[in-house]
Image (tube, rainbow, N blue to C red; front, top):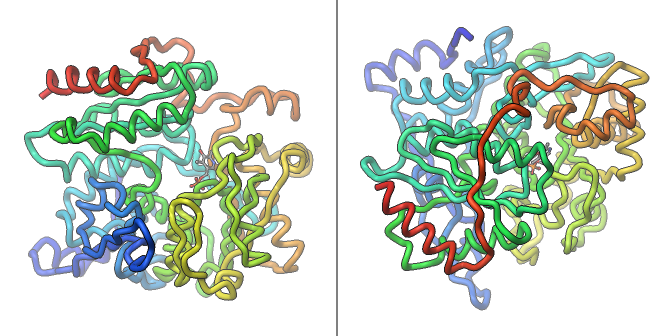
Length: 483
Ligand SMILES: *Cc1c(COP(=O)(O)O)cnc(C)c1O
């Protein structure tokens, strides 16, 4: 793929001469205002992008937020029309990171992160599907994980290997593992529950190889997460340079702003507004759209459909937030979240505060939220019906997550009667859900090119118990030997 970049020429020239100085954006914690809350010591510092990236989470368990949001002009955005994805990526990433790393480095990061297609498929009228399923693990999580991995490689302490620990129930682990594969100076340890991942997921995880090792843990996903959390909190392991790569890292949010800008630039006429529908679980993907709008993208409305875990649509309706615990097991399993971790960021952007446990300390501006965001819950039955109907009506093949997105968009259009340019996100490849698609549509979608050899890959996980002492000994022995 030929790479083209679009930082406006004048800015690029000044960059080269070392004269273009962006103000460095600093990051604060969403919990920084919680002064009089028992058991809480709010983190008041501002940190650089590098620190936010390597820490992952603020010391007070809040999420890092950029103190200012850079602006893109409509001309800069529309200039991306007909240009490759990497051009949009550079425009957005430079706006945040221009002061933190050299433009040449950023270009290299982007070029090696985005070497696959990003199809925009017209369905009917001005309604499109954006397929974010052509990366190495055929899920949209590849977009964020690949860029974050390369940024971590750039920002890590030189001369010291960085060790990423990830607990996964399936898809995130393989996206993160593939993203870090072969990335210089970083080793990855993925923990997954032995009995809870599907055969194909296990294959994806165990066969990455190289600097990415998998541990198949005797226990549940929560046990994996506990092992990882204890390791981060363990002073005895402080010297091992451990870090996390989970979805609350701002380094994963930034790349998720790019495809909104890209899609708008490809499709919109000057002056036109757009609606995005984003099937939502932890709200990281939708947050990318919220930031893109705040950067100047003409987004008329952000549609955020959830599955039956409907805590957020209910909150928008009633103004009362009640998390769902435990979360419900729905067909769109990557969205089975009863308290979205990025809700804290949405609240913050709308002037409110909610903590990790789901307790609301300050209400956000509900009216403004309702003006910008439309959210509905889509049941499993409706999801199945949507998959069938989209195929019958348009020949459109959706998997369960994308179907939640598409149904949410239909409901939005029905309820508002609007005629507007719309893009619904398809976040995984239908071939990742063969049983469902075969039973609903009677066809078996072909695996994307990136996964076609999956059944012939080889690799074995390391067995691990749920006992923290065993895990700690393993880390001490293995990581010291790697130094
Ligand atoms: C993670 C995931 C989602 C949900 O994205 P969030 O950022 O957590 O809202 C949707 N679809 C697929 C396929 C996913 O893997």
